[in-house]
Image (cartoon, rainbow, N blue to C red; front, side):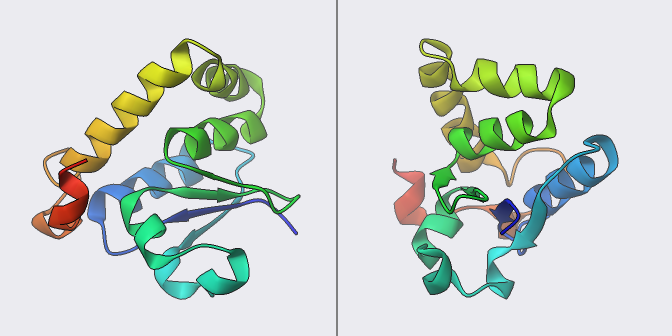
Length: 126
């Protein structure tokens, strides 16, 4: 199985981010919106996929949010891989988690975002 990055296909910010990956990251995994996948077969829930981007590695291991982004970048290799390893490094990991959470909560306000990008209200309280 090839690695897979799962994103919210209904979110314009997420879709814009995926288009950036397709254009700028030469070696990227399969990129799929969660709405087109059998989440049960991947061991994921709708709630997980609504809350954060998901990574399913070639080995079947999953990661979410900032860890999924880090694994995507490590997979890409080169300079991207260095950024990914930095995101996953102790000390930086906690800052990356807070940053990812802020971006996820505010994605409807960011460039490319629309009101439809906002997370369900229960998720915004986290």
